[in-house]
Amino acid sequence: FVGWWLDNGVRRAALIAGLVLMGLAPLGYVFVPVLSVAIAVRMLHGVGLSFSNSTTATVASDVICRPRFAEGMGMFGMATALATSCAPALGLYLMDSFSYTVLFACASGSVLIALILFAILKNPPIKAEKKPLNVSALFSRAAVPASVIALVFMLTFGALENFLAKYAVEAELPSGGLFFAIMAVMLLLVRVVLGKYADKKGEAMFVYTC
Image (cartoon, rainbow, N blue to C red):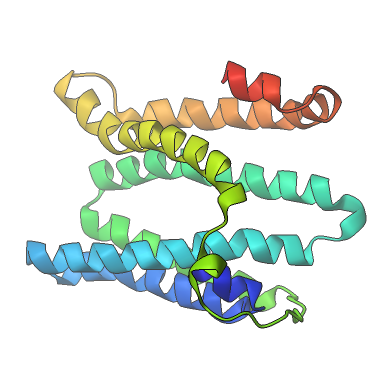
């Protein structure tokens, strides 16, 4: 649904809606003591994540100048990957050193900063042909192979990201945050040099190797 909305030129409203939901959901965890309601808040959190994740990449592709488009999208991808790697380590630190309340407050605060930065960003209006909402508009057969690869990869990474901290505690290892900190450093180092080699040799060798 978000993809169809973006194809119809609705960028700004979609991102704002996603960020607002992402900012409110962590506060819901603080003020809701009932597990069933917390699960509902988590579902709302997922809706916000779907909106914001889909829209940020689209907005980035809109605002990056065409002569430096590949470079700009590479930087955008690196920022996204770094955030994914650093956030678990930071979250574990806040949780261990302070409390869940501080953790959730910082999460909402980071979304507030994102909203302020987006308000400053010059986002040109997009003229797009309006398309009716139907099944063919929601699904693309051409996207299936890449989507399946991403799904299999993220199933593995999702399990690692969510359960590594618990495993570290049970195995009496240092905090899982150390793992994610090292991961973030290596990701940055590899991402800096990977682009030019991928341009020369293609992406296949990196996909198969990884």
